[in-house]
Length: 368
Ligand SMILES: [Zn+2]
Ligand SMILES: [Zn+2]
Ligand SMILES: [Zn+2]
Image 1: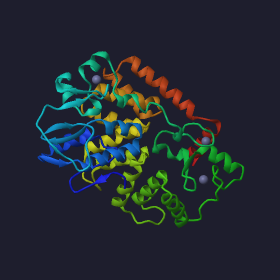
Image 2 (image 1 turned 90 degrees about the vertical axis):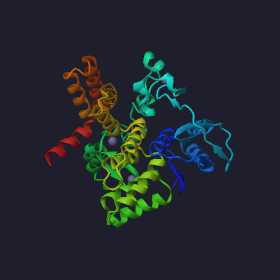
Image 3 (image 1 turned 60 degrees about the vertical axis):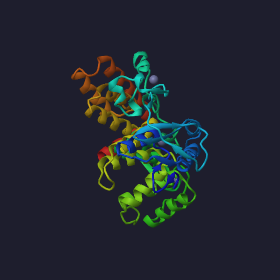
Image 4 (image 1 turned 60 degrees about the horizontal axis):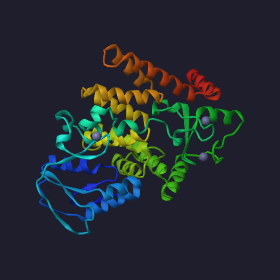
């Protein structure tokens, strides 16, 4: 497992250090001194995971909490102990990402978490949150590897694509149908004959898990989650594997973890953590995660943020997001231009995802 675990604290690479610290402060952490080794090592593993971003994080200050946030200089040595002093907390702006004193924020913004907080300058200048700037387009991994068209955006549309364990790829139903019409039974992408049964499927997945394939780890997690391929259902093992896949950058794993922490049935309910996972997924272009974030903001009464999220997911081809924007327009919470833009974006995303083969596959599904 990547990341650092200790009896004192654990910062997974996808967790925002500042948020983590603020939360431990809220939990009443009163530690006066903290061995810095773990924090620095956490920074290093973030560096390995996230490349440049992690390296930047490593250069930035190490943050500790003793009721208030304390910053130590960047060159903290392993094992060095830091004295924690009470001081006024600096806050990172979610738009310009500068580290600014509390006074640079309005009272309303100060109470927000980092990802949706903007300094007064950014509010005045209309500077968008990083959360809203990233993940606005589908990535290459969301494409069918055969026709190179984007795959349907959510799992709800899963009957429009076929997942293959041989090569861990998702082939669109159009290409799958075209292969079937040519009498091809093998995987249309890698030509491997289909596995005979669940145990063969599992063996294929395990082989790729052993090779460290993040998508295979995600798939094994799913298999434990649903009790697939003859595996006994094991929610705890599933969460562990989802965490690992998420750390390795699988956005679907972040999404699933978000749902798991939001539901709080197999783990302790933790909305803040759920949101962090959905944000990580959404910033990588995960449509359902983006949609869920919109829902959370809507419920919290942050209509402007809800609208921004749903505009992104609607333009990625998510129909329910489009309907929600329409609903917001009717209630006077969105402008006509917002809705018109969402509709245009939704239509062009839908067009981009359709092909004659896919359309034919769809009518076959409807007939069944
Ligand atoms: Zn700012
Ligand atoms: Zn295809
Ligand atoms: Zn294959």
